[in-house]
Length: 326
Image 1 (tube, one colour):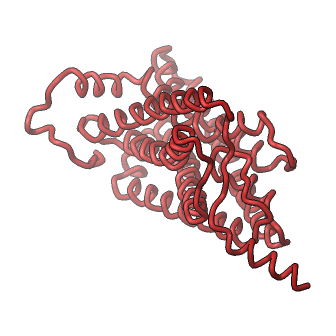
Image 2 (cartoon, helix red, strand yellow; image 1 turned 90 degrees about the horizontal axis):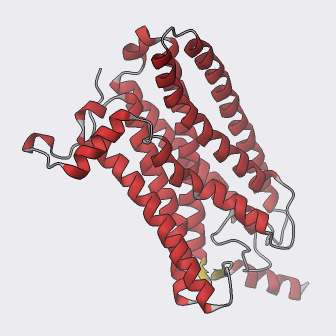
Image 3 (tube, one colour; image 1 turned 180 degrees about the vertical axis):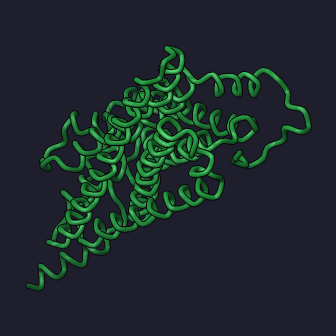
């Protein structure tokens, strides 16, 4: 009994975790650093360009681009929470992350991931109103309504992160070795020493129900959207509608399918390359894809980026927070 209590005290006073290292070979560690550095720079640059383009071009101060700018902010923050630490560990040939650092990483990562998914749901509603009820669009998606939606999204993301973080770290841990390149909840739950981990299982189940509800809402929304798009007489009009909707649907599908695989599949004791692949799919790929798929076929974004990259703004185009047009 005394030994058991002493063991539990040691577990509860855990000061650090050991993250997964991609290789013991120094050259491969440096290769991992370079690959993650390239991915991070590409994702960060793409999202910063979108944020700058929307903020600086008054033609983009509309609800759709206001939401897109917030999505880019969330994506930039999301990858900044997990990738730099993994890069530093590879560069310095270490695996350590402090207990408080792990808690902060879980909280912030889930805050941005949760708010990201909630915002994708709001963006689906925005596209629904714009395409299915265009005459009501300016009234429904007015400036105040859009700001309130974004505030609710961020608050919901914060509570989502707090619930998961509290449920995950309520239990003491039997080990400090995490089989993932960042503090991921499914891997942390494998280390739990008591039944308190069931709190987080309950939170995950609740989150799955909420996520399913959002997904059903998005699917129903797009059924109505595609029905309306097919009734548009002009081919150009249909192409424009599909070009704004299909990328959004692709992002949601990749994000949700890979996230569900990681969080809802039965846990295994040994690390799996498949686990690593799907974790990278839901944590790194969406922030990497969003700037590309939302700008590559969007003439307004491309025009704003060309102005941003190749022309100097006059004094009237100084940086300002977007004011949504009515």
